[in-house]
Image (cartoon, rainbow, N blue to C red; front, side, top):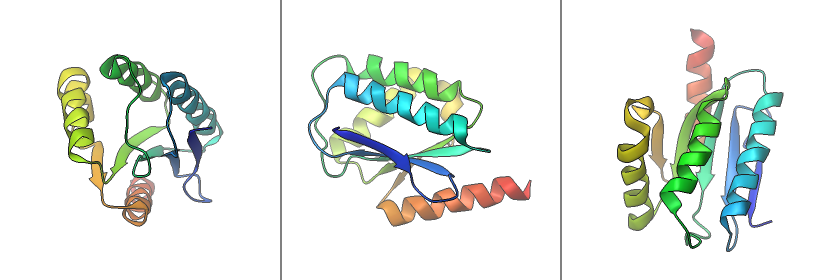
Length: 135
């Protein structure tokens, strides 16, 4: 599989997506379905950590449409938390910013975070989970 999906920690606070090699949109949508299965197993909010540092190229096709389809599936899940994107290159950050402006509107205010690496992502996931538990 070219996009791996697994828990980022034993507490099941975050789903880690890792693009390891060239991938197609069907691989991407399979990864989303796998993450929904994991979210169904979770006892609370699940954050999404997206690591494309090893392989950043997008497959051909309408990226914004495919991201929107995945976004709608994730956001409709009752356990959906924040999204953390690892160290995107300039193109990846521009694409993410464009997507957020065009499709996400106010839904994403403060819910998408760009982080330097997995350690920073895990620290944020744990922080967000602790804050949610304190409420």
